Image 1 (tube, one colour):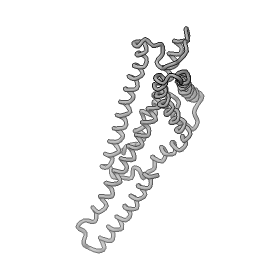
Image 2 (image 1 turned 90 degrees about the vertical axis):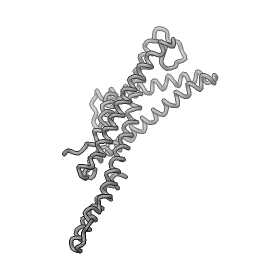
Image 3 (image 1 turned 180 degrees about the vertical axis):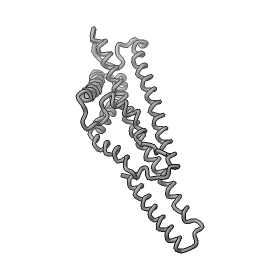
Image 4 (image 1 turned 180 degrees about the horizontal axis):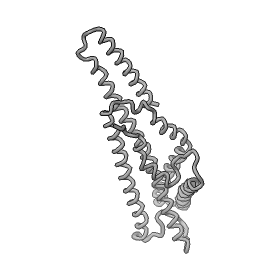
Length: 244
């Protein structure tokens, strides 16, 4: 029986972040670099629109509170993206470390925990993917219904360039939403894998004494104790690997 591959928990997030060019790669090609650049242009450009509106509304408290709420939320996404990019090497090291044989050195029947965690991660990611698409449709439609020129506030009249700004804001929102939610899903999937590994470890510890039951002869008992000590050492190594 082939044991579960922890990488399967990230396949939805991987596909989404590869499209936007934000999944860390050691040697990206020129096309991938262009996608990464577009993501940053979208993120910084939309932030610029919100910041412009914030400065314009600085003396109007009612409008300022609404703009500030959106701006702060978006600033959180920008900071999250910066931290992720700054620590991309550590992130890739974590993914490589998950391939360590110690994370699959458990009985086959305990693979249930990993399978369950991976299925839950994929299900959540698919659900968020659908919700993101629905949210983007709402963002595109509501300005028309609400008789507003743009999905996000912008203080100046753009005339014939309004449609261009509308398209830019929608593309920027699409890239930002995909990046933001995908990053959240990556880390929730990591936590799911850690939880599954801890469940497996706990089960292995509880099974340590199974071989020692009903043993009376001292020679056999000593051999069993040696086996238990070895298994216990493996459990300690497994626990340290999970913490690392």
